[in-house]
Length: 529
Image 1 (spheres, helix red, strand yellow):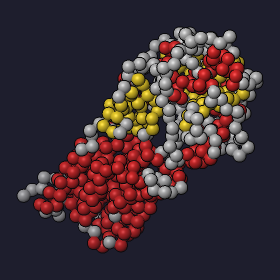
Image 2: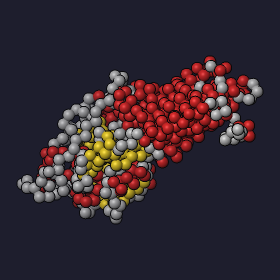
Image 3: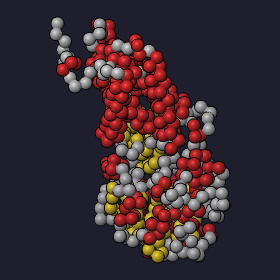
Image 4: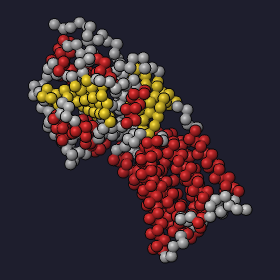
């Protein structure tokens, strides 16, 4: 009976060569997928990525060594079984990846190494298996001479890795979620197993191929119930920059970026501040000599646009520009968070620093809301960036930074270094924690060009006397004196050790309080004498 598959002798690549190429594609694709799976639980710091790269190299090396010792037994069927086992493990990732990640998060290790057990357990075995392919293929190669055979194999494997890197980064990640990407590599492994081994396969082996393919499909369909402890998942995707999820719990819709709560909206009142820290965005209207002078505002970082929406709604004389680097965040904000671009709300898809460098607009207030607990764009933390922001502010302009740190203790290193850096450019810098405890939280920092420092009492008096649409008495009472900064560096473009400064926060719970906006609005409450 004639085979339904083409004669490999008529194709430009032999079966072993195809196997090597696909192993390169799959190993590199899984490496990028690892970053996406690990980030929501352990962050995406340099320590996480260093651990991923190290584990993959170690697993591949061990696979090369073991495969080399068994290379004399190599056959097409053995290579096919390696791909089938890889696909089975990918199915396990689809079934239980989240559960395994959460269980590994409690392993008592120093914060820098916290992600190592999870990466090793989830991605070590399939990468180790793929390491067998190159020495097997070298043994089966038709090239004359050991050097020519091994060079040809490693060249093909490297080309496959390049295709896997670019294909996953530029095509799969923007189009598919984690499960979809894993399914692609699982089915690719199954197809390669069938292609490489079909001439040596009997009925049982062919049936095994079908079972593994079915297992992958069931695995990717099984967990898709759309319900988590965070609520009902309304939308989920992988963007070029992060994992994004929108969840509804009761009357609250929340935007998660890489597993962390970023923004929230009251479905019944889209302009209400759900998270307490967003109320602090209004503090510049107390710090300014005249709140009516704040007419042009720039938000660097969009998220769910809680601040920009409220500013446009609350202050009819204010025009807000928002610069957000992730186009999917912008689209999701418009579709799920009641954001609508208008004459007074302009949205720009760009890098924040690049936008500030190229714009000729002069702002009265710049709000930096692009930092996360474990993912801080260092180029927007440095003294050079602060000087750029200062240059785009008018002479009475104010800079507001929403940091995630602790106000005291070891986990305060990032906040104190950023305070010191901002103070090199701005004469006066204020600090307002958002939680009355020494925990990782949103720490709001306000910097001005005015050399006269306002006291807490002066800000309380201004809050009582001014109509800024929101009562900020409680927020003002969180006023902090300048922190000690002698043991932290000034962050510069040529040296900004942000990952080291964030390291003490790894493993600590990030506390986000929800706002209580039942108090009498400032516009109608009694005004102090």
